[in-house]
Amino acid sequence: MELVWKIFSAIVLSIVEGVTEFLPVSSTGHLILVRSLLGLEAVHGNVFEVFIQFGAILSVCVIYFEYLWKVTRALPRNENAQRFAFGLFIAFLPAAAIGVLTADYIEKYLLNPYVVSVALIVGGVAIIFIERVVKIPQYYAVEDFPLPLYLKIGLCQCLALVPGVSRSGATIMGSLLMKVERGAAAEFSFFLAIPTMLGASVYSLYKHWHELHVEDLFILALGFVVAFVCAYWVVKRFITFVSKNGFGIFAWYRIFVGGFLLSWFAVRGTPI
Image 1: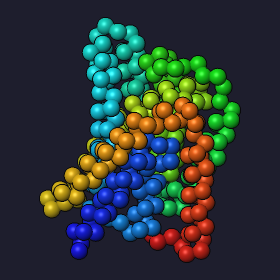
Image 2: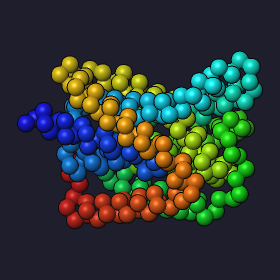
Image 3: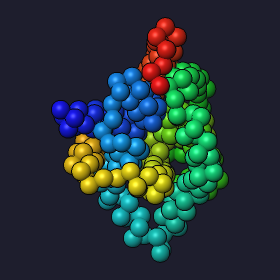
Image 4: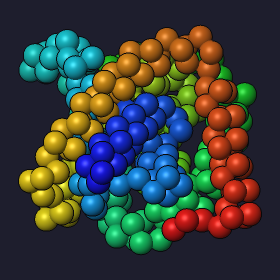
């Protein structure tokens, strides 16, 4: 019976991770809420979340493999490719540095449903506001961004260190404020996710590797595959969707979920 519960937990949590990782709704926040409300635990500790993040990362690498390989091959001779690669690196640095310095504080004080619920609401309001004030876009291709723009987007990503803010939401909304076209903003968010999530996952795995047990390998593999499939499905459709419809639906979703959860906790109390 315990194995069945672990398999069920792994599937549910991996679906949540895969579907929400690249949407502006906060995958970390949703994982905290789902685990808290339903009492799910696939593998003891934080190792499981690391493995399903790897699955989500791989989906982006597969989808954009041709583009990434083209950029890699062009690096020695192409100025745009060089600027994009360097820009991706400098966009990654702020969140990586601040994340390492604040990781223990975040784990101790911010990984709770109340913080997530408030962040969901605040983020939803911010998306609605930004959608209304954005100007005519000036940048339409990720390889054409000037270097300072890469850095500014990377600084926006630091907001996502607060659970519930959303890494993709922070980078996409920051990009829109800096006159990046919606599709290009979403696409760069995907690219920036690769080093950011990979770095965070490796760091988390380093901290929690001792929690890994051989008997959990099947559960970890299952979660990896489910997260990959779900993230692949979402990423393939996301840019087309937001280019046509904008981000309003995600804003109202955040506000509804955050408001509902705060009301729930006010009446029944948080389970953790």
